[in-house]
Length: 231
Image (cartoon, rainbow, N blue to C red; front, side):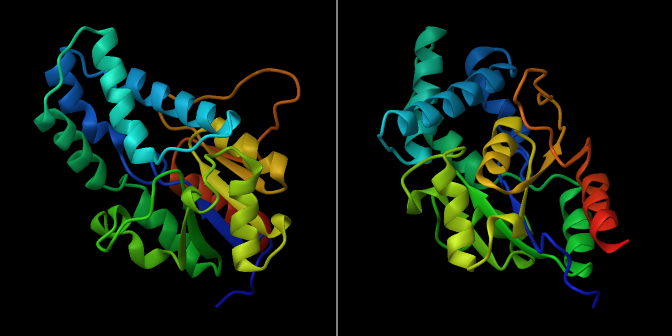
């Protein structure tokens, strides 16, 4: 086993970074006649999760997901049924892993990195969404923001992981396909690894932290992390 690199712990975002939210698209195509409304709903979900945190309020992510679907339906003048809401919940609990997830996680694990997750989603009973997707075995811990009742990118969410693992913030690197997540992590003292999946891009503006690592697929991104700390 190679010597432990620094940062020694890679913290993964889950939704969209590891798990493919595009598998929700058929629901949105059926409800709205356009599967691109998925992105509208997801943007509302992220916006209002952050709004709740900035306002000193908290509602579990799953409830906000349903609420954002109802909001989107109201905007588009679409009537939701209980079956529609149940389908959203079921699809969210069974999202498959992106094809690059297993090979990338295998590389990082074999290189000696410790792997954990940090998600806005609430914790769930086994089998968890990660376990259903075949990724559970790679992670020693799975952290949810529910423990601090704040959503990412609140600094308390990233600090929680360091505290629970009894490490320094500099020992951690966040991998996420959302720039707002890597910005929050870097501002808190992590390193940031930005995965440029579709629908995500850099924000060219002053004072926006440049990620320490960037790539358009998870395998390449993982190789960049490994190469920097083991060569």
